[in-house]
Length: 205
Image 1 (cartoon, helix red, strand yellow):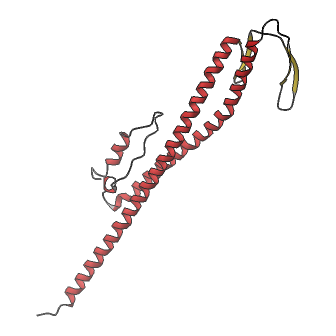
Image 2 (image 1 turned 90 degrees about the vertical axis):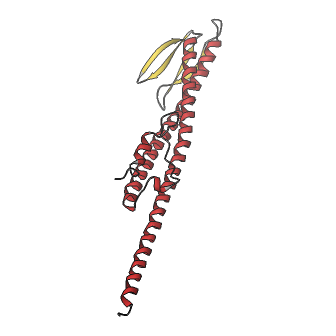
C-alpha cells in the first residue's frame, strides 16, 4: 500500500478529542487524501462505517446515562429539601406526623421529633447516619455532580451527532468519487476500443 493510503491511520492516531476524550471525525475535504485508487474505496468505506457504529454505540450509552441522571436528580433534590427542612427545626418544635414508603404499595405512619442527624441511602442496600450539616453538604455535592454530569452528557450527545453527520458526508464523498472514477475508466476503455476499431478500418496500402 502506498504511503498516501496509510495516511488515514496516522491521522486517526493524531486526531484531537473533545474534553471527555471522544475523537473528532475526520473531515474529508479531498478524497484523494484518503483514497489513492479505487481498490482502496471498499476498505475506506468500511473503516468509516465502523467509526459511525462506534459513535452510535457511545451515543446509546450516553442516552441511557442521561435517562438515569434525570431519574436520579429529582430524588437527590427532594432528599436535600427534606434535610434542609429538618435543619430548621429546633428542640422546641413539635414532632412531625408523616408517612413513609415501605415498598411500592405500602406506607407507614411516623412521628419525627426534632433531630440533629439523618440516615441516607447510599445504594447497594447501604444506609449511613450523618449529622444534618454533613448530610446537607453531601447531598449538595452529589446534586451538583449529577447536574454537571448531565450537562457533560448532553454536550457529548450533541458532539456525537455532529461527528456522525461528518462521517456520513465522508462516506457520501468517497462513494461519489468512486462513481466518477468508474465512469472515467469506462469512458477511457470505450475511447481506446473506438481508436482500435478506427485503425482496423483504415485501408491497406
